[in-house]
Length: 301
Image (cartoon, rainbow, N blue to C red; front, side):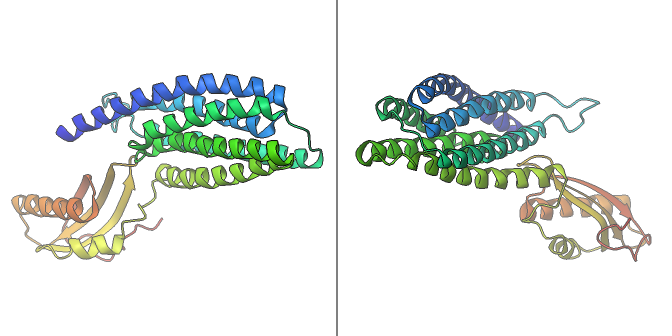
C-alpha cells in the first residue's frame, strides 16, 4: 500500500513538471517557426519541429501518467500502467520519423545553401536554449520512468539542438559559412534518432512481454531448486508490466505427499527469493506432484 502511495506521489510530481514543460515548449515552438522562416534558418526550423514534438509528447505523457493512476477493474485487471509504455513507444517512434525527415531536408539544403539572417536567428536560438534546458532539468529526476524518459529525451535533444544552433549562428556570423546550418541539423538528428531507437527497443520488448535482460531464467531455476521440497520448475514466464513492475508465472513440482500447508511455506520462500534476488514483484505459481516431470523450463508450442 505504501509502495502504491509513493508511486502515485511520483506520478503527481512528474505530471506537474511535464505540464510546465508543455507550456514552455508551445511558446518556443511558435517563436522558432516564425523567426526560422524569416531568417531562412533550417536548424532553427528543425529545432522548432523538435519543440512541437516535445509539446505533443508532453501532452501524451501527461495523459498516460494520469491514466496509469486509475484503479484496476474487471476489464483491466492489471490496471492502466502499461499505457505509459505505449506512450514511450509512440513518442520515441515519432522522434525517429522527425529525425529522418530533418536529415532528408538538410541534405537537400546542402545542394542549395542559402544565406541566413543570423541577427534574427541568434536571439531566438538563445531563448530556445534557455527554455529547453529548464524543461530538461525539471524532468531529469523523473527520467527513470520509461514514459517520462521519452519526453525527457525530446527535451534533452532540443537543449543540445539549441546549443548547436547558437554555436552555428555565431560561426556563421563570424565566418559567413552557411553550410554549417544543415550540417548541424544532420548531427542533431543522428544523435536524437539513436537515443530514440534505444527507447523504442526497450518499450517494444516490454510490449512483447520479453524476459527482462537482467533476469536469467536458468539462474531463477537454480535458486528455486535450492528450496527443500521442490523437484523442478517449468513452464516459466517472466515479463514486465511496465518499467517498474516485474511478474512471473510458473509450474512447480513438489515431493509426493507434500501437504497444502507445506506448499504455502514453499510458495512464500519462492516469493522471497524472487523478490530479493531478481526484483520480481508479482508471482503466480501452480503446484504439481509427479506431473510434467520431463517438461522443459520453457514450454514449447
